[in-house]
Image (tube, rainbow, N blue to C red):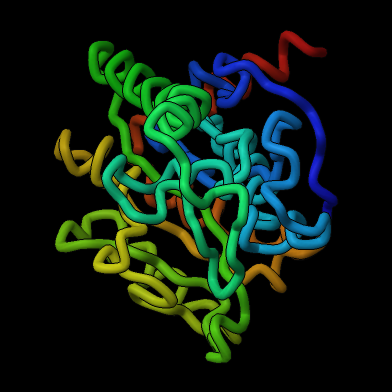
Length: 272
């Protein structure tokens, strides 16, 4: 797995948007895309190897989301800060917004933070991430562009001693407009074990980004969780990105699919 990078970022650089004008109805987020800990935080009191573990990020999730965004002509919004600094997929009052413990690992650099230190972390990464998503969605809605929000994550094969048999999980609440056809398509794949609200559910407080930006606006949404040993290398990342791209392409409205194909056709023509 990739080692933790040591690059300092300003708040304007802690969120990255790929293809902001994407024609796809799907907007993708990668809430735990990076294991970067800016140097002002040191190593948060952890050995370097811990910053490469799943506690620091969602390994493999960003390559999958990036490949999907490229193939679908979708917009992708990603965090560029480790969730150990601040978890952008948590509400501001969550006890693990700045986690004192992740899985079973204590995070010394997150203990006894002052209100000012906590606010600085919010301003560094959490607020730019959510402000950016909100701005993109509002711009799309103002243009009458259909918008569906999908967050891409990965999970560990074993958590606190419990094995997780699912290759992929789809997380949803009572709005199943997107989740139901997605689950149905995945269950038709041979050899794939699909978790429905596994290994997490909204009751585990992992649905915040979708609640804040999609559910609050009545937009269809779903959360994808891929077991990280499935996407630890380029082959698995391509496999799952391509499988999901095919499914999402079939879930696009005909009008949106036609617009995307025309846009991509023009791009090919201009490049030739």
